[in-house]
Image 1 (cartoon, rainbow, N blue to C red):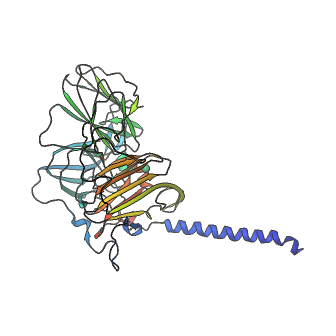
Image 2: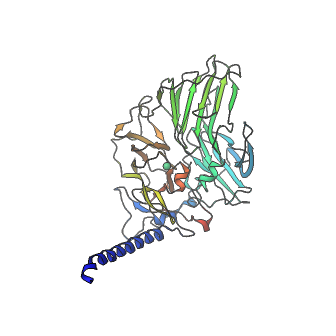
Length: 492
Ligand code: C2O
Ligand code: CU
């Protein structure tokens, strides 16, 4: 009897053994993914030197050097001072809809901060009652590392009752925004953000207005208004609209009633911007476009596609320009005229990195599911791009996942060299928040000129919170701050 049943039993035994091994492996993967109560974000990461110099033998990749906490902005009397207090508030949208929001100074968007190039800016952040804490990140402003506002990386979150003072000199000009970088995916969605505009010392005349898009509980708003907002503007007035997308998704803006130019992207002016009509502007989550035109005798409208939010400008203060169907979408890769740049695709790079964004089954802090991966690793076991001060860095990002990822690099602006092998032929295109579509491949270059530990993450903040987040770290710089539930720091 045994010889006849043998093969079946053997198969069963083999099956059970395979199951045990598989379960053991899954269990090990699960255990491996668990994050401790507090942890150093850098200690799990896989240092990647991009083919450049590595630390000497016997040194670890941080080289026992400076702490990010010491890389502060300048001292001395500030040129301009702000106070922002994070507080809960009930917001009433223009439609009458009420939102339980998190605000700066009781408003969302928070106060628009306007400063002048060269100013030493001082901002004191207070926290009245926002749990578990708050910070302010100056999105797109290349501040000293300790002023970057990332909880658990560059500072501890400001707990209710606490405060923190940021100081930095603004060397750039353009459109930026600020937002909490503590529990970012929740706090930004609920309203902890505002616009930051750095004007040139010689300010242009005319109407200069931000158009900040945000989605509160599913309601799209422009500057906090979820319907048609009308403004009177005399014909002939030069107009600059500063579009900011604070949402998690790429958003389509439509401007009707006038030809226009895209004069800046992510706070950097474009060269030779040509006139556009019937051109949709698709703005990355976290990204900014500045558009300019001369007010015509008739009305002009800025719409957020597929939403009721409209900014309606008109000489009579009442008319609303009808929508015009766009017949193309703006593409920065070929727009404007080329100009000299401090480096190019032909430069000698000290480091070349390649990042591939993927989606695979696995565990994130013990939770099973489809996870974002960076070069195959699931957060926090993702690459950490190691650079040295002065390096010229090439960064290739490939999106092999099924979604769009607006990748945001803190502390630096990168020059777009190519997309899918097609070189950038328009104006130099500097970006801090770059939308990378499915199967797209971008090659970027940046100068490592701002020492610190910097985040590089997806600005769909839900993706960032789900692990699409990593760091660019300078060799010799360490962070004393810790992330995790017990540390009360949750950068995402
Ligand atoms: Cu706008 Cu890391 O953020
Ligand atoms: Cu993403």
